[in-house]
Amino acid sequence: MRWADELVVPVPDLSVQLALASADEQLSSFQAELTTQRSSIWSSPESAQEVVGKVAGAFDDSLTAWLDQLPYPIASALWTAETAASAGERQRAYIHAWEAIVTFHATVLLSATRSDPGSNSETEAAIRQTLQEQHLGIERASFGTWVVIAEKASKNLRSALENGDADDVARVRRAFGDLSRTGIERLISKDVVKKFNELNVKRNRWLGHTGFTSEEEWGAQVDSLVSDLRELRGILGNVWSQLLLVRPGSARRGRDGLVQTAEVAVGTRSPFATRAFAVGDHMFDGELYLVRDGSQTPLRLGHFVQLRAAPSSAQFTTYFYNRIEGSRVRMVSYQYGPESEVQDDVESFRAEFGDLSAS
Image (cartoon, rainbow, N blue to C red; front, side):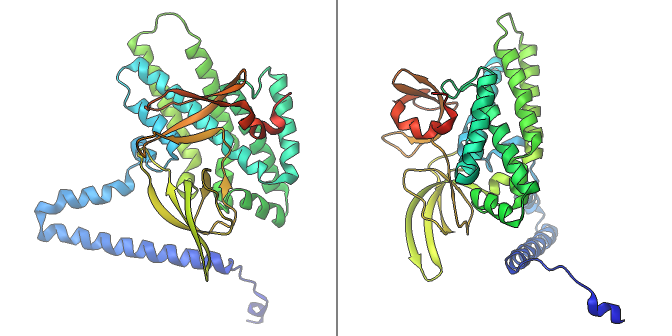
């Protein structure tokens, strides 16, 4: 048995071991609770449906259940589509929801790229060149503009993950708020960009069609758009429940480091629930961040996506950057809210345009 003296057993880092042990303990407790609940229905048959209802939610794979895991800017746009009255309204609302998805996703990838100054200029130069070649531009941000941004940003990030060393992988993880490599790979997957390109073709074909469209055609288009959502969900998995969109609040520093409260902007409803996060870097008031508990470097989201509260309430409306109009920028909303669009001073956006702008 001397060969056993040289046997090497791979062991994950201590932090990974602790996380796995914690997850296993939680799953064991869930299993024990499920066994208890299952036994209880035999002594209390009248509670059977209530018990099933409690458990069923954990296995609900419907799109409606998915909305509760999505960042508010996406979830609220999809909810608007789900609750639209007619087939024609649903078709337009689902296309708008896809615009929200692509804009948000591209903004996340661009924000992650910009958090790493070493590769940022190269990525933005590639984006600007491709936009010019396709006669697109950030000045008038179409669906295709955001697809190009997502495609080029994800390509460079994939290269760093696949071809880089351990330091490169760690750098990319820091750029995404210390999200796991598996989660990042889902966000920058070629399949995501492929799906976005497919939706761009559908959008141009269906919104550009000026002839009569029957209710049956509207319905078929809605079914197609919903099917695409299911495919996107399969690609992304539960990544948005691992990396949460938040509005930062107060912070305190204790013996174990910095702890900051934040409103978690997830799901379709606002006001948002508040939660405490252990973070390495302070998150600034008035910004949006993507964070997980224990993030050393929370990811600040670029201003191409904004949440604005109604003056008299804590109800939020999401606005997405659309285009420059003279000395103003136009921001549009794809959800039910007090205003479908707002305008800002273009100078406040100069930093956001960065090297993407041709001028």
